[in-house]
Image (cartoon, rainbow, N blue to C red; front, side):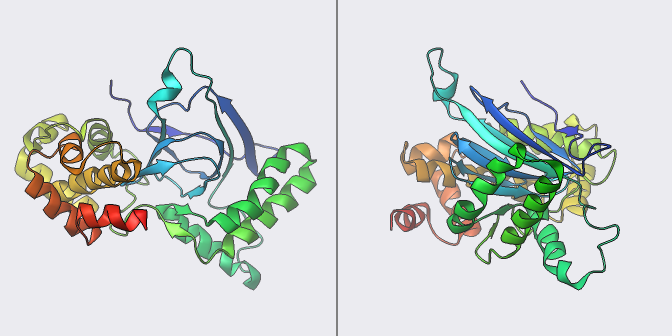
Length: 290
């Protein structure tokens, strides 16, 4: 069943400028959603697949991710978490804060240039290095154990550590434009939601156009104008991202993965993979083993 990309409201309250939450569930909810607030996620226990923008990749314990404002995302646990006798848990700490945090009286302070740079980079999502996770993880876990002033000072110290991570990696592709800032763009909302839930199937552009009540030509022009890429390019990026995740997991061979990701032709899959990743699936697999 398809779940709409839901706009959520989180973060600041009348007496707090950011929120800190600890989640401990049998599994994370598979909800494709976005919100104005930035989200810093520290995975304590859990593994599966994360969807951020047009990127699909594995997540596991010890991962630290900063998700930018209105950047759609979803965490999906592995099948083992849903088995009736599963003892697995999904535990994470999440901090939500508004993009205007520190922008009121502190916006012109020279020392905060790095913070504003971090906010800009976060628009496509950031995955932080193992060194930063080791440094910041305990600080995040300690935030809900202290008083308000100490919590604020602790959060500022965390942001300072994140700003210093020169090895942080962008998650979504540089071509991904964040259109969820455009209020009321329900057409794009529907398209993204459908693709995220059906990209492994045979997707016809005519059907997508019908989904948003447009003819094929109008839809193709609309999608290219809005996202700076064709619908086929976007669909291939999602499929190849999922293929990379499956290659890393090594649970299937390349031929099986190509069909599982929605390609009916292995040659077409190889061409699209090399176009996106710069190397063939077999070479990519060898590079991840190195």
